[in-house]
Figure: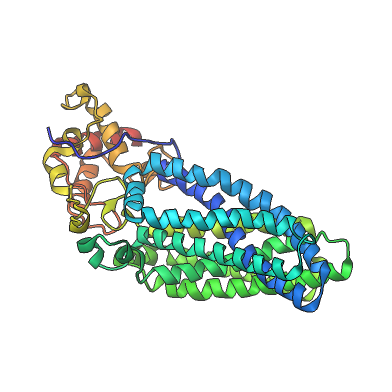
Length: 444
C-alpha cells in the first residue's frame, strides 16, 4: 500500500489544532514586537541622552530595560519554544517546509537573536558603568541586531503566505522563497506596529516616574512615538493587502466590512489615547497605560494575527501545502510531488499510515467512527468540530443540513476545488459518505 508522509493527527477540542498555535504566537508577537520596537526606541533615547547630556534619560532607559527583560525576554523565551511545539504538533509538514527552505536563514537569525539577548542585558547593566559613547554604540548594534532578526523572520513568515516568485517552484532556491511581493510590505507593516508598541509600553514606564516634569515630557514623547507607529502601520497595511494572492483577496472581500468597522473604531480610540498623552500627559497614569497594553493585545494584535492566518488559507506554507497537510502541487526544485490525485484514488484510509487496521475498511458498524476520524484529518486544522466551538465551528456552518446535502456540498465544492480558500479534497465516495454521516449526527 502506498502511504503518503502524513503525521499522527493532533486535535485540541473546541479550539482546533492550528488556533492553539495562533494563540501562543499572538502572545509571543506582543513580547517580541515590543522588544524590537524598544531596541529602536533605545537607540533614539541613547542618542538624545548622549548629545544633550541628559543622565535622567539613562534612568528611564534602565527602568524600561528591566521591564523589557521580564516582559519581552522571559515571556518571549517561554512562548517562542511554545510556538515550535504547537506548530510541530498541529502542522508538522508546514514547519518541515519552513525548515527545509530556510534552515540557514533561521541559523543566521539565531546569531542575531543571541546578540540581541546579550545586548539587552549589557544595555541595562552597563548604564553608568561604561562611558556614554561606548554605551551609545552598543545601543546602535542592539537595534541593528533586533531589526536584523525581524527581517529574517519576516521573510520566512511571508513565505507562508506566498513564495517570493513562481521561480521558487522550479529552483527550490531560498532566495526565490524569501524575496517576494509580500515580504517588504509585511516587514514595514510590522516595524510600524513595533514602533507603536514601544510607545504604548513606554507610557507604562513613564507614567510611574516620580519626577513630574520628566514624567510629562516622556509621556508626550511616547505618545508621539505611538502616533508615528500607528500611522506607519495603517499606511503599510494598505500596501500589504495590495500584494496578497488571489485566494486571499477573496477572503479579504468577505472580511473587509468587519475590518473597516472594527479598525475605524480602534483607530479612533488609539488616536484619542495618543492625543491625550501628547497634549494632556497628566491624565496618563500607570493603571490606564497598563490597560491599554491589554487592549492592544486583545482587540488590536489578536484580530490582526487571526486575519493573517485566515488569509493564507487553504495553504499553511508556500502555497503548496494545504492546511490539512496534503501537498497540493508539484515543486520540482524540491523534488516534491502533488498528493491530490493519489488521495482521490485511495483516500485517507489508504494513504495515511496512522489509520487503525480495523478502520481501513468502512462497514455499517464502524462508519460513524471512521467518519469522525476522516473529518478530523480533513478539516480540523481550520475548523473546530464541536457545536459552538470557538474558531470556525464546522457544525455551526452546516447546521440543519442532512447527510445527503453535506455529501453533495463536499463533492461539488471540496472535491472540485471550487472554493478558493478551502483545500481541494477529492476522496472516494465511501469516505465522503462516512464523513457526511458523522457530521449529520453531530447536527442533531
